[in-house]
Image: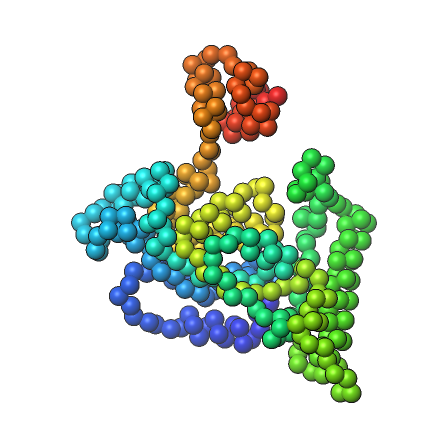
Amino acid sequence: MKLTKEQQQEIKDLQSQDNKTKRVVAPQLESILFEAIPILDHGFVRVIDYMGDDTSIVQAARVSYGKGTKKVSTDSGLIKYLMRHWHSTPFEMCEIKYHIKLPIFIARQWIRHRTANVNEYSARYSILDKEFYLPSPEHLAAQSKNNRQGRGKIIEGEQAKKVLDLLKKDAEQTYDNYETMLNERYDGSIVDEKETGLARELARMNLTLNTYTQWYWKTDLLNLMNFLRLRVDLHAQYEIRAYADAMLDTLKKWVPITYEAFMDYRVGGTEVSAKGKLVLRKLIKNEKISMDQSGLSKREWNELMEAFEMKDKVV
């Protein structure tokens, strides 16, 4: 990830501010505020602003004012109770705003989470940077044979080199054509003084999906956790998971008590259906039960057995 001198100076200026406030602040999050956390080859995540902390959730749940005489242990117990019983409204009282630079194909996947306020870099108004995402060799994988939206084994050797060369060549060629159609380079210089450039809103259609874009993404704590629960999962695409992992760390710095409950009940927990609960009860009592007797499908049965590390019962 490369930041321009202007971007580096902007971050330095913002971090040098010393603004006094009567609002609650999260000291650990304050320490990385505005900092660009590198993701992939050219991307980043920056926390730009936030509102509230763990005490804000507790106050909302109690509909009270100030911290009062409640202990941290009591606050922790309440937050765990809220998380455990899906009492979600108090978590909506906290908000966070990110500045994110990401490949277009990840942005299109990301935007499916329709629970945030988004303002994206305008390619109608400005020229996109000449930066493209190219996977590192360890993430260059073949299509999975048993999962239509997953990856299989790693591609190596000459085939891997061929794929990377094609990705780079296509991205650079389409960007060169983009500049030719615009009659303007990304640094602002004119390609041919005698030519008239195509409108930016039309020229952009030629760019590859691994071209980087940027946006401001603001959401509340509840919807951030819903996003992270899905995107830090090992089944999520690696590229979006890389962003989610970095954002998970910002969650920990922002609301550490909520983070602990989230990791316990959402990320590390397992949802069990009514039929699945009956199966587990029988197994705990050492009673015999088969998949056919359970009323579960083969996939449901195997997921349940794997979740509770009973791989000998997988069929």
